[in-house]
Image 1: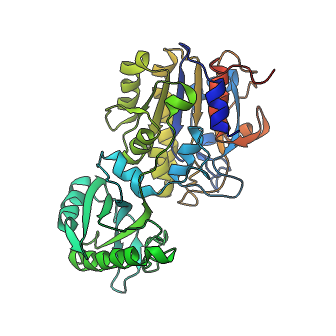
Image 2: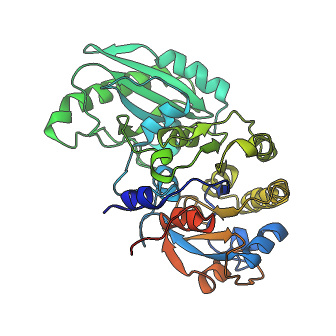
Image 3: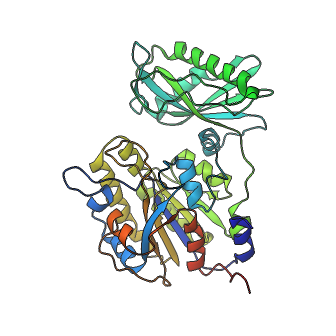
Length: 401
C-alpha cells in the first residue's frame, strides 16, 4: 500500500484547520563572526513561543545529502514523495501564470542572464531585471517557429520567464542549458534519450536565435533554460486527504505547484503583510491553508545574511495575525535550506515546528537549527509532516484492527 493509499483510507473530514507556513529557504549555516544561522540570529518571539508550546525537529526534503529544488521541497511538504512525483520547473512556471498547456507541449523555465564577451556567465539573474523589462524581452523572443515548432515566451517575474515549445513529437527528456554557476558558458541542451534528439536540436536553435536577439540588451543579453517538462496527472489533495485546500503565494512557481495538487490559488499582494491579510480574509473558507514567503530564499541566494534575517523577523511580526485565529494546527518550516554563506540551495536539513493542543511540548528557548536538532522529534522526512499535521488535527482514523 502506498502512503497516498493509506492516507485515502484513513482521512476524514472535520472542521479543524491546518495552516502550513513555508518560509522559503529557511534553513541556514552559521555566520562566520557570530556562529549563528540566520534563523538563530533573527528576533522571533512569536515563533519561539510556538516552538516551545509545540514540538520541533529537522526534516530532509528528499534525503540526507540531497540538495532539493523548490518543486521537490514543496511537494514533500504537501505529502508527495518527491522521488515519485518529480516534475520539471517549466510546468510549474507555466501553471503559475495560468498558461494553458496543451497535450504534447514542452515547458522550460527561463532565466535572463548576463554573459561577457567570451560568452561566460557573469550573473545568472541579469541583475534581477524588472518584470517590465523582462516582459519587453519576452516579446522579442515570442513567436519564433523552428521546423514547424512554435516557441512561446511569457514573462513570469523579474528575470524569470517560461518558454513553451508546441509541435508534433516533442520530448521533455532534455538536459538544462543552465549550468547553475558563473564563470562558464551556458551548456548546450542535450537529449537524454534517442527520441529527444530532434527536440534538443530545436531548443538549441532557439537559444542561438535568442543570443543574437538579446546581444544588445545588457545585462539581460542571454537566456538560460532548465526544467523541461510536460504537464503531469497527479492525485489531488482533496482525493488523498479529504481537505479543502488553498494556497497564498505571490510568486508564480509556487502558485503553479499548488494548482497542480488541487489547491485553490488565492489572489494576493506581493508583501508578507499582503499574504497574511489574504489569509485573514479567507480563513473560514478552507481547512488547509498553505502560505508561502519567498524573500528569505532570495536573500540567501544573493548571499545577503542580514536581509534574510530581516525577512524572518518580518514573518515573525506578521504571524500575530495568524495566532489570533487560533488554528488547530500550525506548521512552520522551509522547503529547503538556502544558507547565505553558500548563496544557493543546500542539502542541510530544515528546521520545523508543529503546534497543536495535542503536542508533547519540548519547551525550547529559540526556534533554530541547533535546538530543533537536539529536541523534539529529531530528524524526519519532510513528506511525513503532512500526516503528522493531519493527525494533530484529528483528521486520521486508526489504522488496523
